[in-house]
Image (cartoon, rainbow, N blue to C red; front, top):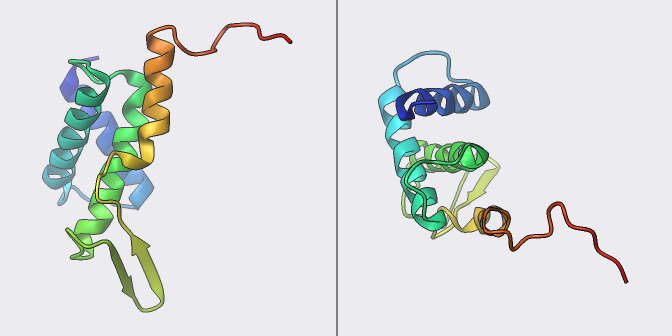
Length: 118
């Protein structure tokens, strides 16, 4: 699948998850998707985003969208009318365990497909 197609698929996922029905935010969300993809690709040392990691990019995009739409860019937390959000300093941090698991499996360091005994 071509990169533009993958970005559009992730964009559709984010819009469904966030209940966005129009195209007014497409350019902003596409920018967030590209940034998140770049961060994930850099971490896993890949040129193209692996299909297995698209969900992480979608979740990073959604988190950044929520933070920006609440004028909380750069803030660690935000609350309004009884609702509160906490944000990470590093947007990729909550997904490190999944990314490390991907790396372990990609590089045959994981336990996927192996038998354990004692």
